[in-house]
Length: 431
Ligand SMILES: *[C@@H]1O[C@H](CO)[C@@H](O)[C@H](O)[C@H]1NC(C)=O
Ligand SMILES: *[C@@H]1O[C@H](CO)[C@@H](O)[C@H](O)[C@H]1NC(C)=O
Ligand SMILES: *[C@@H]1O[C@H](CO)[C@@H](O)[C@H](O)[C@H]1NC(C)=O
Ligand SMILES: *[C@@H]1O[C@H](CO)[C@@H](O)[C@H](O)[C@H]1NC(C)=O
Ligand SMILES: *[C@@H]1O[C@H](CO)[C@@H](O)[C@H](O)[C@H]1NC(C)=O
Ligand SMILES: *[C@@H]1O[C@H](CO)[C@@H](O)[C@H](O)[C@H]1NC(C)=O
Ligand SMILES: *[C@@H]1O[C@H](CO)[C@@H](O)[C@H](O)[C@H]1NC(C)=O
Ligand SMILES: *[C@@H]1O[C@H](CO)[C@@H](O)[C@H](O)[C@H]1NC(C)=O
Ligand SMILES: *[C@@H]1O[C@H](CO)[C@@H](O)[C@H](O)[C@H]1NC(C)=O
Ligand SMILES: *[C@@H]1O[C@H](CO)[C@@H](O)[C@H](O)[C@H]1NC(C)=O
Image (tube, rainbow, N blue to C red; front, side, top):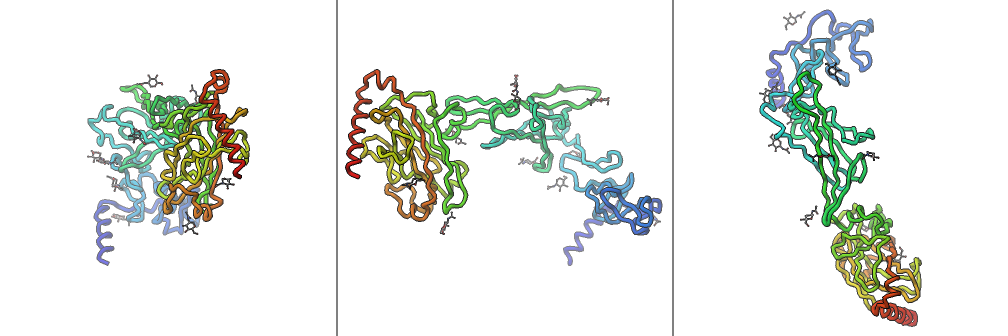
C-alpha cells in the first residue's frame, strides 16, 4: 500500500502545474455520453457531429484525443494544457508542439559543439546481412536529412529503405543490405585471406535557405575471413555438392556441402575448369551450415572413390572408413579433422582408375551429438543404430588432368593406375 501511495504522490508532483481541460465548449465527453474512435475522433453520442473532450483516450494516436492546444496526459487521464509527449521523448529529443500535436523532435542543444568529426557511423556484419547505423539527431544537428538516406544505387525499393531503432535511449537510422555481390550495387572483392563487400550510402541535406554542408557519400565495407565455406562464394565454378543432412533423431535438416580445395588452408576451391594432376594432393572439405556447433559435430563416416557416378560401383576404393583414414586400398589419405567441429578436412592423393576418365568421391556424414565420442576410429555402431536415418551421402567429380597424365608418361600416374586396378581386383576377390 505504501508503495502505491508513493507512486501516486510522485505522479501528482510531476504534474503539479498541469491543468485538466474543464471547459464547456467543447463539453467533456462524460457530460454527453461521448466516446473516442480512431476513425471519427471524440464525439458525443447524443449528436455525433458534436465533438467532446474525453477523460479516457482509446485512440491509437493518443495526441489525437485532445482538441487543439491540449495534450493527452495519461497520468491524470485528461486533456491538459501542458505540453507532454506520450510515450516520453528520448534523451536527445525534446517535446514540441507541431501543429498543436505533441511531437518528439531532436534537441539540438544536446549536440551543441559536435562536428562532423563526431559522426561515427557503425557497420555490423553477419553472414547474411550488413547493417549501417547512423545517429539521427547528430545528423540533423550537422545539417543532414536522415529521412533522405539511401544506397547510392537506389534502383530497387529495398535499396531506398531505412528504418529507425532506439539504441541507448536515442534514435539511430539503419539501412540493411544482403551480403550478396551486385545487390543494390554491392561490390564483392577478395584477396588471399578475406572477402570484402562494399557499398555506398547517400545522405541528403536539409532543405534550408542557408546550406552549410553538401550531401554525404559514406563508403562502407564488411570483410569476411576466407573459410572452407566463404571461399566457395567467390569461386565461379567450384567443384562442390550440397545435400540435405537430416538432423539428429530425424528432427530438422541441414545443408551438408562437400568441396575440393587445392591447398591445406581450404580456401582455394578447385574449379570446374581447373585440372588436377594425378598424384598431387587435394583437400576434401565438408561442412554443415547453420547447425549448433556446441551440441553437434560433423562426423564423416566413410569416403570412397569410384570411376562412375554410381555410389554402388563395385570398383570403389576407400579413402576413409570408420571416420579415419583408410589406406589399405592403396590411396594415400590423411584425415586432418573429423568429429570435432562442424567441418571435416581430408587430404587425399589423387589417382585415376585404369581406363577410366572420371574419379567420383562419395562421402557419408552425420551430425554427431557431442555427448558421444564423435572422432573415434571405428565404425560407430551405436551412432549408426540410434540414427541410421541421419546419414547423408554427397559426391563430387574431381577434374583430373588427363592430357598431362597421358602425354607426360608420368611414372607416378601410371603406377597409381596400375596399383589401383590391382587392388580393385584383390578387393573383388576378397568379397
Ligand atoms: C476549471 O479549472 C480551473 C482551475 O483548475 C478552475 O479555476 C475553474 O473554476 C474550473 N472551471 C470549471 C467550470 O469547473
Ligand atoms: C530515456 O531518456 C528519457 C529522457 O532523458 C528518460 O525520461 C527515459 O526514462 C529514458 N529511457 C530509458 C529506457 O532509459
Ligand atoms: C536539450 O539538451 C540540453 C543539453 O543536453 C538540455 O540542457 C536541455 O534540458 C534539453 N532540452 C529539453 C527540452 O529536453
Ligand atoms: C550509451 O551512452 C552512454 C553515454 O552517452 C555511453 O557511455 C555508452 O557507451 C553508450 N552505450 C552504447 C551501447 O552505445
Ligand atoms: C544497381 O542495383 C541493381 C539491383 O540490385 C543491379 O541490377 C544493377 O546492376 C546495379 N547497378 C550498378 C551500376 O551497380
Ligand atoms: C525546399 O523548401 C522550399 C521553401 O520552403 C520549397 O519551396 C521547396 O519545394 C523545397 N524543396 C524540396 C526539394 O523539398
Ligand atoms: C566512395 O565510393 C565511391 C564509389 O565507389 C567512390 O567514387 C569514392 O571515391 C569513394 N569515396 C571515398 C572517400 O572513398
Ligand atoms: C579471421 O582471421 C584472423 C586471422 O587468421 C583471426 O584472428 C580471426 O579470429 C578470424 N575472425 C573470425 C571472425 O573468424
Ligand atoms: C534423440 O533421442 C534420444 C532418445 O530418444 C534423446 O535422449 C536425445 O536427447 C535426442 N536428441 C536430440 C538432439 O533431440
Ligand atoms: C551411406 O549413405 C547411404 C545413403 O544415405 C546409406 O545407404 C549407407 O548405409 C551409408 N553408409 C554408411 C556406412 O553409413
